[in-house]
Image 1 (cartoon, rainbow, N blue to C red):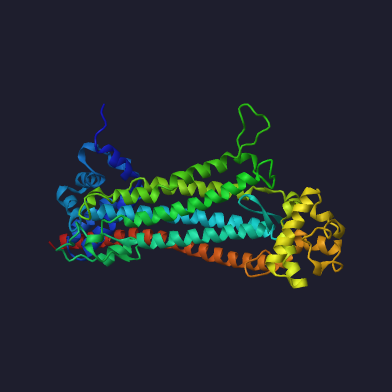
Image 2 (cartoon, rainbow, N blue to C red):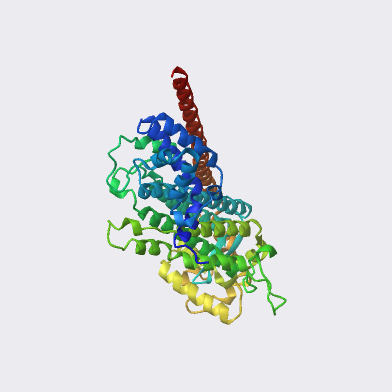
Length: 491
């Protein structure tokens, strides 16, 4: 049997069935309260729609040959309350603004769900950062050893990037959370509708003022861009962990539940969870570009062609990868001792030696930098490590500053080159010194609490709005029924 051409569209609309019913309920409440439809018709429609709330599309006995989900609902209503009452449902609206409204509600819900997951990742990372606020580790630039880092400091930086992701998602959410219902086909309506009523009943923060903008999907590009930026950050986090979990680095180890085995190499512990994140991030690059490409149709009048059904799947992917990475961080084994042992490798504190030469002996930084470069080259050639360096090893090289001769000893050199000395000294704002790391963690924790509170507050608000919509629709149906009964008794 051939698939009906409307079947794929109906399959997509199934995801938005709950939001579609809420739009119908809010619309009927508004039509009834404004007197656009009679209380009798409004009561009949509400009485038929309310039992569908909380059900699945299967309750409608869907037949693809009968058209979109809007028409499937009308068919169900016609069978329940009659064709005349069912036909009143589309008064003062079209499939254009109806569809735009429930799609925004679905996109809003999925964006909020993603933000909730991102806030959870932020909290997990900060918990690990608090455990390792004093864990000194080697730092890298160009994937080469640079200066000592602190693992908790590194993690608090990740939390800061996550907060930026949440800020971008919130900005997209605000653009999404505007109600297009009542813009109809782009010219408004001749009926005395109350758009603020339906907007409030559906939990929107306001209405889309201009009827021509009711069907625009540019807000989807904002969501997609924010989600793609999030995926870019997740890619960075996953890449760091994959590199540092390799045998060559050995700074962290993933829990076995996030790893796979090899079909031929029994010794391998493959970081497949991190690879999944990185693969998904590669695809995410195209999300905003694809939506903008969709908008390059026949210009602004071509609104019917502007739909991005893949956005829901994209947000689900971002949610899944965020949740996956949260699990990785939550179970991550940090090799603190190896981090500390590697922190001074590769002369990572050479820049600090140059700083101390400037500070203690009045050299210019360029002179000190040149001298330290020569010292490092000499020690590498002679296989002398920083923690075993003696003044006799280097004071004979030509580049050794005359101002220092006879004024420093091996203890001074080894202390200056110690990674913990460097960390303690790096106390500039945002640095790795203990007091700065503690301040950054406190700041990140406070920011995370604000982020979580905003998200949980919005989730509760929407839950309460849905409950209020059902209660208001139920009360209106009951009142109309009582009025109808009273009128019948008088007759």
